[in-house]
Image (cartoon, rainbow, N blue to C red; front, side):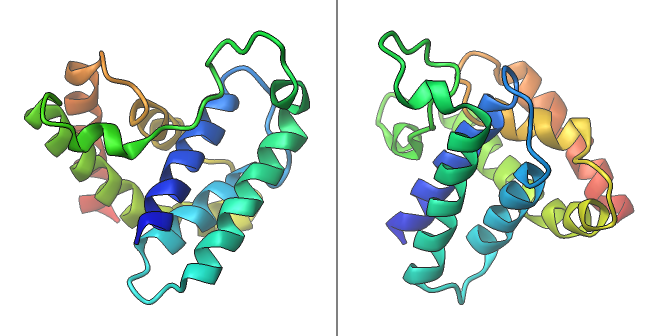
Length: 155
């Protein structure tokens, strides 16, 4: 479903936004709820579209100036996952990113439980979601993927 890819790209953009803007009390739940929906094979198009709207609204709350900025810096841009399907895209990087997406979706359930009890997203989780939108950090992505695998094994 194309909408799921759009949702994931917007979640990456929201995470990137938090690197330069303070999160609201809802940001972590919006991110995790979106990842859980992304992972749900039974999700409807309408549910995904609703999640996309939630991500857009959350980004507007934490970075309102970015929507009207005359000279966008790119720091809060959404990620277009179609880039990874291009013929010139590094196949190893694509595989690592796809593995990372799966691990993040697996961890989203436990992270959501933690956030619901008043905790915050783990630094490693945030770092991994942020890195999905990067192309020049393959070694870092491989390293974080190994660390996420360990975390998934412990869960």
